[in-house]
Image (spheres, helix red, strand yellow):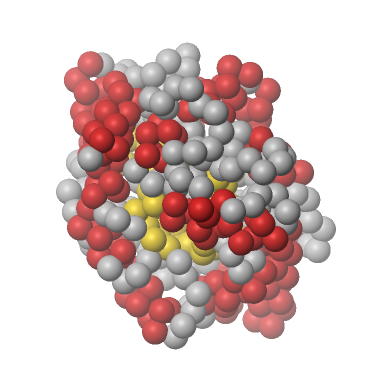
Length: 377
């Protein structure tokens, strides 16, 4: 999600010949055809999840997640690519990544009809060189839009054409190279009503179905997601998504999954219905994923807060592991050094499994232990 606003909560493969991704079976099957068509890999769908790049440390989160046929990923952003120590952990510890900001509209189409994929390609190239699956985020969102779109006056026909061209151009550029797209991001208010965005005001709620259809046409093999925050627990907002997804599927609109961002805060309590909520969406025939996980606290952190945070990270991990169609978890960057939280939530931070010095916190150990225990079973 966005890196800049409280309401959005998102902040924000050069592949060696015939090598495979460290990718769970379910992920591999969905991506194999497009990668094979691009001449990048062969027979990936038949490759066991435990096979893949040579990672001698079987305790990394990515390896342990792969042993459960899932991914464990981290978001990243282009300014961080100058930090070699950071990149070393990102490339070795995780088997999936998401570009935090590089694929948002302001970055990919800064001027109308002028596209720039420099930043997105940089993150994708890192993912491919490190045998990581790539979640693409996001095609349609009300924040971080370029000025020409925010300040423009467009008729419904004009905006519909702009939206279709944007989705088609961006998704085609990455065709066969990404695991999934967050096609529409944060479409609902907390009470379950549609968010008042340029797209909803001008095009009505049908823009969501159109976006999904255009994304499928542009990249038939990418998994297509709706993504939002504060839908981890059962309530008005998650109910709205549940009703929308049922309606979309009844209309045969292409949708493959729902992303539960997971921007949690100790002061608001743990979402106890998370597992139940994941399961009800999975029972509709959808994949589900935790897409932007961080667990913030009022700082300074202390041993008690860090222990509670660790317990929550373990509980989220176990909730995903308990639902067969929960395909993976992504933390919204892995280190407090690059967290978006302090800039948006005054007095809060310490939200991620690694501290500002790139050292693992109790949360890291809790995640690792939860994954290891599931892999053994």
